[in-house]
Every structure is written in C-alpha cells, then in structure tokens.
Image (cartoon, rainbow, N blue to C red; front, side, top):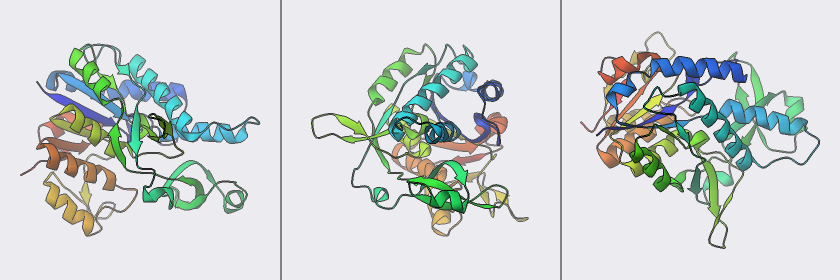
Length: 306
C-alpha cells in the first residue's frame, strides 16, 4: 500500500491574474490530466490545497458589503467548500472515484507569538492612501510587477493538530476515491473553555498542515505541487541551480544560510524536512507538469533521510 498526500498550490488551481470560476475549472482540468500518473503510483490519495485568491475575493466582497462582516475563520470554511467542490467535479473519477471534500479545522496555540506580531498578508492590494484609511492592520508588500503596495496582515500561527484527522483516515482507507482536506491550511481554532473549539481570525500555512495530515495518516510520500519545477539554489539569478536531492539536514543548513527567504520555498522545505525526519518517508517538491519525472527522480526536488 502506498499513500500520497498531495498539496495543490500555485498554478495548480489558478494561473496568475485569473480568478473566475470558469478559469478555475479549466486549470483544475489541466491539473487533473497532469496528475494522471498518480492513479498508477498510489493506492490512497489525499489532497490539500491553497485558498489565497478565493479568500482574497471574499475579503474584498466583505469590504464592499454594507452588512456586518463575516469573520475570517468563516471565510476560510467557505472557500474550503468552494475549492473542494470544484476539485470534486473537475477531478471526477480520475483517481478511483469522486473526491470527498471535508471541511477541516486545525488547532493552534492561542498564545502563538504571531497573534501579537501578525506576518501573513491576505486579501486585495491597496495604495498607501487606501491602506491608511483601513480599520485593520496592513503591511507593505511588493507586487509581481515590482511595485510597492499594501495588504491586510493577519496572524499565521503554527498548526498543532488536525481536528478531523480520524475522519480523513477513515475516508482514505475506504478507497472509494481521494479525500480533499486541509484547505487553506485549515480553519484555525482554539479551545473555547467549555470543552469545544472556536475559530480565530488567522490563516494557517497550508504546507505545515499538509505535513500534519501526512503524519497522522502515516503517508509514505508527500508531494508539494507548485508553479516552480524544483527548489533552486540562487533562484532567479543566472547562477540558479536545481536541487535534485537533499536530506533534511541539508535543507535546514541552506535555510539557516538565508537560501529560502520568507514568501519563497521556506514553508515547503521546512515542512518536507520535518515530515522526512519524523516518518522516514519521502517528500517531493515540483510542478504538475514535471510530476512523473520527479517521481522517477529525474526532475523536481526529492527529500529523503539519506
């Protein structure tokens, strides 16, 4: 038995500048075709996914609405369901049966330092004048065009556990089709003091939640799919070089040397290194188009214990 947990991110759901449902459907169909190799390589498939563009659109809609704003945890839940449905319909029976989307919560520490010093930009871009008029905290960012802009900034606490992990495991073991879970990193929740949990205004990094899910399911392979075909040394320079194989220690050494600044591959390499350390499994970072070659070790970046 082989169990793969596959993180869908980057251009696997949307190309830069897109955002309509029709565009998402087209891209999901392309991704489905690129992932066909998985139906031959894995018995159990569990997908996680990002939700940045979808949450961004919902935040903008909330700003433009005259009614009370919906809390961020509810928007994360809404977009989990949205993307899960689009994957369910777009993937169809390509991976052994229709995907089963599951709204997923992740437990976070209410004392996580990120609640006092938020680090995660979300939502639409603003000018300096627009940002100064907002009731929420903003941070300066650089757009793909190189222009300076501002975005809302929210806490991004570390996920500690997946509340629905047992349900995910049961669905995966049924082998009636893949499971879709952990969307957008999961809905962050904290104990409510009454034996339950309540959502908080934060977003969780999808890659770290993917690692938690893979650990809980005893997966043997984690696939991080993004819009870059591998992890690179000196990325974006004339000297860039793809890292084909690495151990967790090698990735950590590169991270500590500043090779992976915030907003780059840092969350992915950190999550992959920890997964391999804790399970002895395999992690691969690549693009959907290079997936089959990456599984054979001829593309992408593969992380193993030795």
